[in-house]
Length: 73
Length: 518
Image (cartoon, rainbow over all chains, first blue to last red; front, top):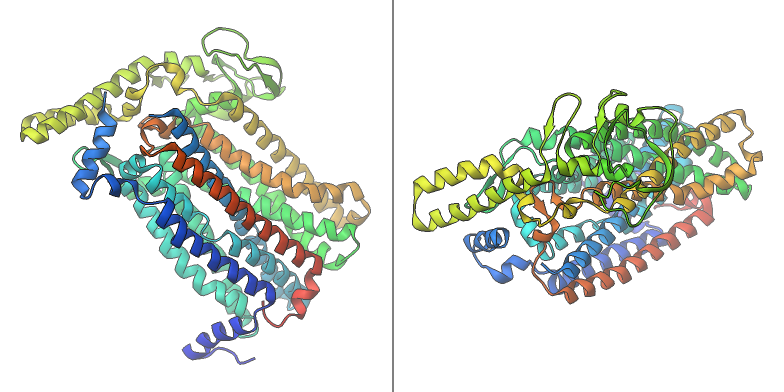
């Protein structure tokens, strides 16, 4: 196997690494991608919106909202 | 605020954090061992060490891949479920978490690639250096997360800006290197090394029981037992220093850890005990159904304040106010609540002065706010009972953690000794204990976090902001829904993780050696 001596070699290390991956490693990458998809495309979008953005649009309004929650009697 | 909403939001955060913590300690623990095995390979050139390194690297990779990014869900929850808290602390949390994200990404993305893909492509020296740097990067990530957590337990290096409603960092060094953060980091990372060592010893024990991969297992145990023993002793030591910080800054947590309601000089440590469930903090009754103290008089005083005769306050003392043996005076609940209400009134008046453009009133109220902000959170409570954490859960988990910590010292010492003598394989019960030590290590680690987090209730930021005012005003049904979604998704990922691990373990180190890539 060629030793790395250039930037291209370094890049090829990634390419070869991915090409020669075992079945287990490929499965792990599938798990990573599915997980990231679930987290960012489903959970974050549909279940975890930023709450303050829904009640205030500017920083001043957000500050006002939080302060009100903190100092209400 | 709706009690059910607070409860479900806490449950969801706890579920997510505990799930995340299944992966993190093994990543850091196996990471260190992987570095040491790799160093042995570099020094000796012996291919057996390479094989040992590659096998544990494979398990490391599985754990890392399934666990990666699970912590980000906690950040989602901050924005949705804990928006008041999140906004209130934004600037303090922002810096450590941003540094963590950037450093972790670049160090890990670059050097882990060399670790896994770079065998025979880079020099042995560079490969070894990459392994250490990648693991160092992962450990450094833990530093920044723990800095953020420590700040919640010991808020320093900040001031509250009443105009923006945010805490702003005014001393980065105080935040990043607070004594609480340093102790928490050392204690946590060392405990991860204990877990990683228990994992290696446990799996190697299983191979020895099955009479498979004997040379590999003995070699693995040789290093893991020493690392485990050293790390467990150091974890106990840093736990002691952490306890001393808790005694000073979170005395209620220490009192809950020991089930101590009435303080005393020459206080003892409970070795084993069962708490009464109907104890009221000021009823004067014994809180224990029965207990056995550690037979060292004044041990709790010594562990807390380095003096066997020191006064250690109990829950009632903390509520009534007390003076430590060194003369430090701690105000009562009533005094702190009065200061908290003063601070809150000053904030109201400050905001009114802002609307009225009354600069003089702003200055006066800012001064009152600054003077009393330390106990701002006490202004939210209606009774002193609200400041008491769940004592039973804190007490039992603390004692489970300590008992298992002591078990691991003895366990690693015996395993190391017998492995060195070459008789470990014959001691079947110890090998089985090794296998069982894997779940025990997880129980120890999770118990530690329960003590740290449940023991500091009801605070999200110690003395400044309680949970009741940290949560977002969202429908409780939403939180319940996402709780069960997480539970389902996490369970699937955990099953996948364990399944892939078991499959790899069954195939053994030779299968990893024979495969061309990872």
